[in-house]
Length: 304
Image (cartoon, rainbow, N blue to C red; front, top):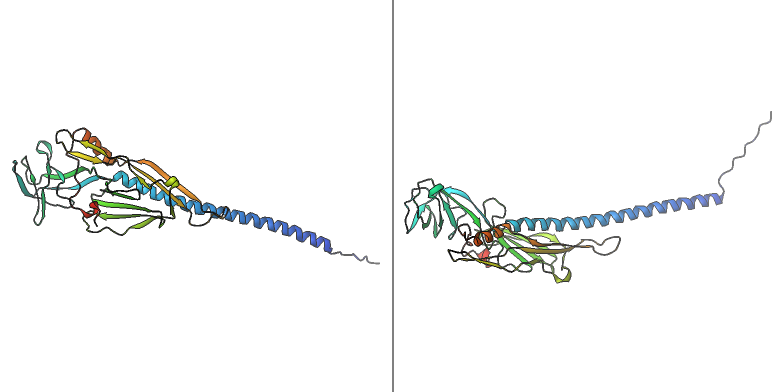
């Protein structure tokens, strides 16, 4: 029986060329899509980093401006009984932590309660001096609450924001300073206990800071509000709001546009609520809770 011989034919040169061309088209398209996706991903990532940085910085600014001017002393007590009178007396107290000359403290509770302005403090033994008009027994509560009218300090400028108070709501008075330096391209912040004799080193909150559109200042303040308290005749000056504008750019070139992307974040009226509460107190003739600045403090005076 005769066998048939099957003829097997391979690809022709033209078919190979066509197949190769198709493969190159498909591969090129896939690579183009991959590169486009990578550029889009990178563009989104660097913009997200920029946005997160400016958002975190402005959120901290809002929070701390809102806390500026707060005073909340940890309560203590008198260590001995006091007989009321019109003359200044030096009385022993369990603790003087956080107290300062000029501070208005509330002594006792109920009908014996009164506000006493401290005229002197001694560390050993711990005593305070002031005019105690009412009599108080040993163990009478001593506390201090209120606001600092100058919670936003009048020494603040277009590039430097200075504030103080119980910023962290932990009973400690601190001085906080923000510096906006568009030449160095940074927003920095330092926080220092009021009792310190030197300002702590600042840390960078935001990099790649750029000048604001139209030359807008980083920090702006409305006109100072002055209120004279009826009765005492004392005049207090308040800065009732802060406008914050920050412009930043991406750390890298956008791979799509080959340019730096920028973002401007603006808060036109961040309200220091404690300062605004002070305006309400002063307007209503109440100054027992309006506290003076700790005297001679180099941080508040800008001399250290």
